[in-house]
Amino acid sequence: MHKFISHSEEDTKSFAENFAKNLNKDSIIILTGDLGSGKTKFTEGILKYFGLENEISSPTFTIVNEYNAKDLNIYHFDLYRLEDYDEFYAMGGEEYLHNGICIFEWGEMLESILKKGYTKITFSRNLENENYRTLQIEEF
Image (tube, rainbow, N blue to C red; front, side):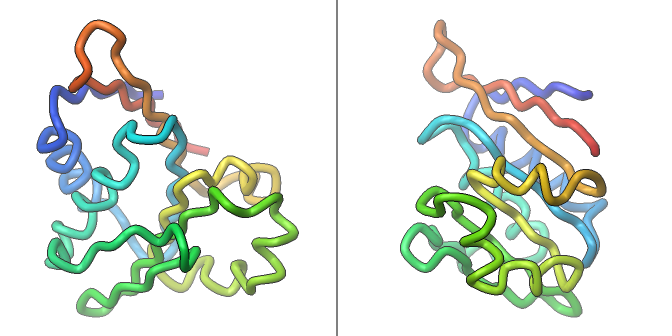
């Protein structure tokens, strides 16, 4: 387990941009944390690394946004509105796995079906400074 303390949105995006250097078409990332804790900013940093910083939009109403970067697809999911992983399967979600980088906001429900081969990043707010976030990075 690794921890990173972010002092700002730019800090979070910069950390994510650096994190993205090690991603490939089999990368699966679960982002978890309260609303407004930095999950989408983190995704912006990943997209910036791949030259897609102006492309991001929240997938809240579409469930998934697809981005094409050079020779790699990036799939950004927001699973907040899904009841359980059965709904993920019903929408054909498993077809995205290992076909590009998969970033799952609110993806905790997938942990039981993924079991291993993914990274989980938990975002926590700092009660003393509203701009600070702790990112706890775990590899499974």
